[in-house]
Image (tube, rainbow, N blue to C red; front, top):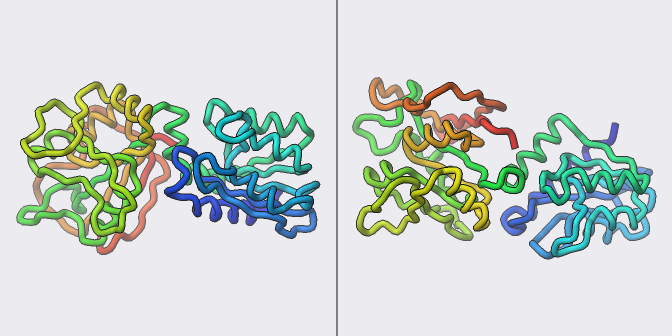
Length: 321
C-alpha cells in the first residue's frame, strides 16, 4: 500500500486554489522519491495556468525520474488551455502514480490512467476515505461535468420537532448558523428560492458580513411576475432545462433556500445533491414541516452532524459526487 500521508498533503495543497480555479477543479500534487523524500509539490492556481502535476514536476526536476506522484485527481489526457498532464508525467520518468480519484470529465475519464499504464507507469487509486474526501473537494465540478447541471445543495433550518417556523420569532436558527449560511452563499455560484418565499419574505439572497469576494447570482424558480422592486433573476422554465442552461453559463454550484414546495419539486426531480439542515434546540409545537409535500421517500447517504453555534448542522447526500 502507498504511504497515503503524501496524498493527504496533496489534498491540503489543492485547497490553496479554492476560489481561483473555476471552471477547473482544485488539484494538488506531491512528487516523492523512492527513499521517501519530497522532491516537489504543487497545486493548480488559475485557469490557463499550469496544473498541479506540472508545478510539482517542475519543482522536482530530475528527481522526478523513478519517483512516485501523489495527485488528488486523475491527470488530464487532452489538450485544453494546457497540454495533457499525463504526457508530462510520462516524460518526467515517474515510476508510479497514486491518485485519490478519477476525473469524470468525458475528455479524461479513465484516459489519463490508461495513458500512464500504456507507458509502463504503475497506477494506484487510494480508495475508501481519501477517495471520498477528494470527491467532496470537487463535488460541484464533478456534477457539472458529469451531469451537465450545477451541484444543488438544499439548505433549511428547523426546530427539534421538525418545524420551519417558531411562533413569535423571526429566525428559527441562531446567529452562528445564519453566519454560516452567508458563508455558503459567498462560496456558491448561485443562490435560489421559490416564488412563495419571494412573495412572503422578499429575500435579498446576498452574502453579508463574510467579506465575500463576489456575490452569487440570485435566482427565483417559478412563475412571475416578480414583486415590484425585486432585482432577483426569474427562471420560469422546467427545472431540468433551467439547470442545464445555468450550467452552460458556468454555474457549477447552486444553493437552494426557501420552503417545502420548491424543495419538494427539486427532490422529486432528483435534482438535489446535498442537504444542509440546521436544527435549533427549540420545540415549536406547531407549524409547517420541512418537506411535507415530498411525494416519496428519499434515501440519504453519508449523514454527519456538527455544531453550528447553538444549533446542530446535519449534512447528508442524496446524490454522491
